[in-house]
Image (cartoon, rainbow, N blue to C red; front, side):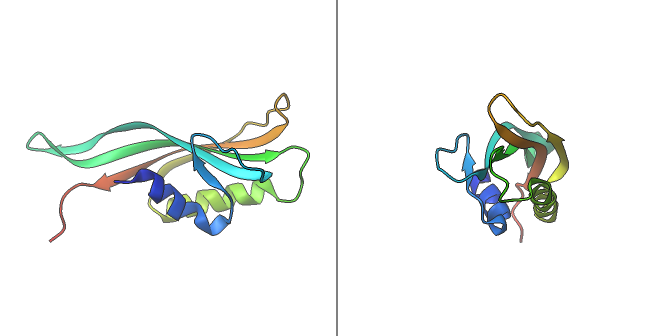
Length: 118
């Protein structure tokens, strides 16, 4: 599974830059994500039949920029993730005055069915 594509497709309706690991652009609001764990979520006959991917996503906004309602975007991120089948979506406010960014941190997981469908 191309998990990065799943994240991109899920969050594309936001119209924000979404990048894996690091964003180097100039937009004041963006999302960066990483997959920090991948494991068999279910097995049958000692073979994985489901694979779980655990993600951390960061929604950043430059503190000096008030062009977007970060709390509204946070709610939209949660809604899009849950509609796409992501589970255990947890959001934490992690404003960082030292780096001058407002931030929402999301933890979530996605389970892929590895069995072929007839």
